[in-house]
Length: 157
Length: 253
Image (tube, rainbow over all chains, first blue to last red; front, top):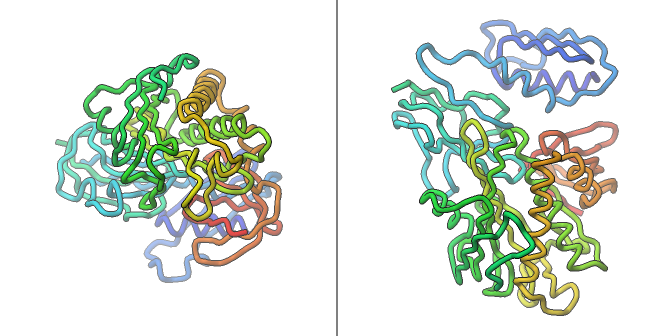
């Protein structure tokens, strides 16, 4: 891995708010750890501790990203997390003029569309697989999302 | 317009023709909601009042001069993460079809899925899918400028504006459906390898040095290498390899 790629990876991880990320592939092994109680404002690039083994193949931050997303913290106790099935851009409404598909307090059932994730001009309506009440929307409209990134917390009905 | 597309097995066996509608993709969605649309179902419109391009942008077309249609596919053999290869298959199919109609011209795919003839846009694709734990449906919406020669939107051409003759809309649609079906069945039965290879062969500006604008408005020079395994654009900038999502890069010149 090149120094620049390691920097990009650290930037990416600090933006996710994860405490610790371990990534290991055939080519390299990297561990990024954030010092607890640190606020986002305090120099994120300097904070994480990095240990990287040399890599024969270059690896882009985009490839490392899904690994990082899988390590996302567990959902609040008793709730179900609806996660993004793909990398892309999150949209909370069918089009810019209309209102959100769902908001906090709404009930959903399997098959209900909860959001759109757009990837490479493919617009994907994401359907709920669970029944329950939306207790939290974890991403903002038009925000980039990773594979498996938590999108909604649902209190099962 | 032909009512029956004899040369295809799946696509276009059921056809709805609408003189005018808001958007063929939306019409297809309501057919799906009513449970009356099978794989291959085709909706063709003479004129669209609310043709969809990318989110918020529109697709303009004069009445009965161009092809505006949507096809329903059920690519449940693809995981949501791999769905971008459907984009690749559709773009390659459309590229092959336009190439067959305009053999003397350079036909290319501008990433991710616009079709360019001699460097000018002739067609666009908009795919809308619904995903539960798998891909349930994908509506492939295609707009191709055929016989419109006047008042084409800025930066657009048509089959007619390129060669100066009229085309039979039904025949053009048939050529596209044949190529779409061939590519779709190849994807389903043999995977995406050859389609990805072909996609890279016809990629607009690939291997050339051009100017691009990033999402912050910064202009930079780069060379398109291809697409990565998530469908993102891979670009060589100086000695670095950078991947871009659709909203994050604009082709300049």
